[in-house]
Length: 96
Image 1 (cartoon, rainbow, N blue to C red):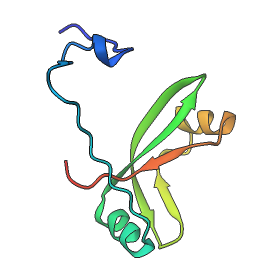
Image 2: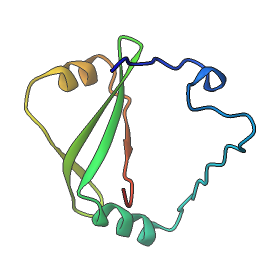
Image 3: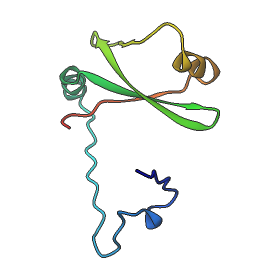
Image 4: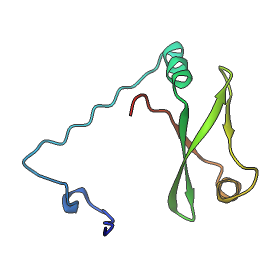
């Protein structure tokens, strides 16, 4: 099956200008609610930049209410990338 790299939504094979593109974003600012979301998830997604390219890994994690502990190997691409650029983003998603 051929793979398609999409640089622009308008050129994506699934894009239809007749259908409104709707994305709902829910911002949660209450710390108790944030903790509930984090504790409800089994997996988080850690995003980083490797040589200017995005690199995202699904990881298991632990959470003690203040600190996120990522479960991973002690060596590998993720750690080499974080050593070069320690700026990361962690995402937790409820549902499928």
